[in-house]
Length: 231
Ligand SMILES: *Cc1c(COP(=O)(O)O)cnc(C)c1O
Image (cartoon, rainbow, N blue to C red; front, side, top):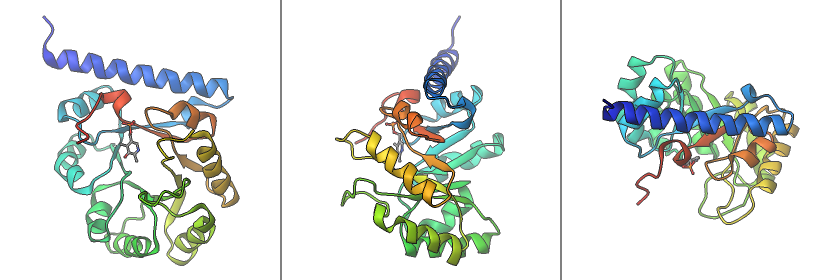
């Protein structure tokens, strides 16, 4: 007899295998190593059963976009699976920075000086030097977070040299209605000229293009877990 848990486990494990295979195939096509591409499972607004199934399938790197939501789900799971690596991939308010530093392992959305300063202070206070990504608003969309491309070099230097943040890479979310390739290429160019090795780019709809353009992390949600309640 198949129990519901077996069924969820099977479906989620199948999804992960499928996405990993697509990453590997794309990597091979562009002469890259699949192991250089980290799959971050975006679990925002997904049922806890699906997250547990992903953990049982061996997935350890997850992304969440809200501090408060993550605080409700992850502390217990982190006790159960101490090797979880949790990435903050959504906008961070400075008044949540202390909580974010306590819970997350990587912060991908450093996008303004005030936040960078508060993060540096909170990391020092907590004795944690978390790896951070600078978010770049490659499409210069007014409603979207991220530094503009022309401001990125100076902002990266300020975060690294003046504030001592452990800047490991860049992150972007291309405009929904545009081809993502030029945005991924631009992010790669900014990273290269600033000596940054990691590129967090690509979601369910475009992670293969991102792999082509050098992504070292892809952030995939719905293709792994199914549609979420995005209302
Ligand atoms: C929700 C989200 C994702 C995942 O999007 P899917 O289309 O579900 O794969 C990736 N990155 C960020 C920043 C997100 O907020």
